[in-house]
Length: 174
Image (cartoon, rainbow, N blue to C red; front, side, top):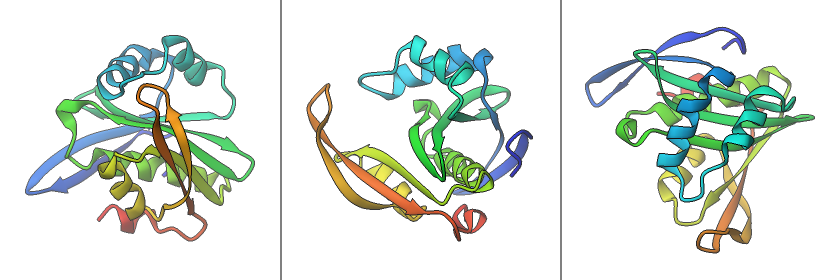
């Protein structure tokens, strides 16, 4: 998957065919990112934070998944030397359960590998077992905890890591 090319991808889930476009996000996508963020998280990132991520942060890379030219989900990561730190994965509530998070994870992992990334990490709420299941499918495993990481309810974050050097991302999409 090229880091600069938009790719049309098809995902078949439960006899439903979804045609989605996957591409790198830019500052023009900010309003839609903010709407998905607001609908997905108890404590959404600020507009200023995403403006920085999408326009001036040299280590940030964000991918979006579009259905009928509408942004319905996004994922971002920071590339630091040979490691990727996944900062967010969010899908609009109306489009969850369609396999779009898998597509976004594949995009960020593939791009990180192309940039010679060897490992990736992320934090996930201890109560978010749906996300944990997805991350485990992509080879992530729990390596530690951050007690009280989430300030809205003092919930613990699980720290997950994956070695991506030999990961077959296409195989993980099936």
